[in-house]
Length: 345
Image (cartoon, rainbow, N blue to C red):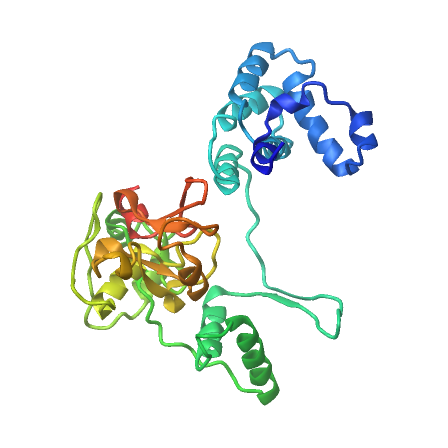
């Protein structure tokens, strides 16, 4: 069995599963329990025999790790009938692990506790310790803005940010409020709700990685001039400029509206610190037009496969939606929705 076959091994490999055989083969008890849970769902006794038969057929070809993930998610569902209903939906999924997680979380509607302010420190290791700080997004956005001032974009940012923070703490300087210049993406339906007085709880996305409510939007001072950008539901942002290697200021602004953060999935870099990327590389004839631009962090801009082959995948924009194409060809949408998703999806 080669690696591709191993990664794609589905529920059929568990037909004759045995706990004793699994343990004798050297599997961990955790792995054994995960496999036993899947085996029980698809091959164990149940009064939902028709659903089990249908699920077994649908699960054919689904990677075993995704089946394990489904069963772990289903442990939070109270009734067997609901578990089978959700299971039958989830085994139809074909795509990424992250996509499966998002689909499961939509179906299993459990309240997620809001994060609270916290500061934690790890134990020392080789003379180093780790601090994790959870605080209001606006305060931390101000801090990140200050720390990124003056760092070298050609070298890894993490160590430079750590040194800048240490220097700030040693000097006892206060963190100035950053000028609030990120772009706020406001779908027209939400804009109408906000200005009608019924949109206080609307959550708007900003290109610096933060969010604001409809109430905060109304109270914020944006100045006397408000820039407005229009987007077509299928073709994306309006084509503003063509014919030069580097995007102009307006194009960069609209590209940030399309990508409020780096377009690679799960990258946490906000659009305020990304680079404007040519989807079809300039060297390959790609124009500097809005339908060929996306926002990527320096790392992902460097590893993006311009020739559309390689282990990091590449960025595309089918139907005007910025999307990462995995090496196996799977389409993965952006982690943070941009203007096209907020306006038209």
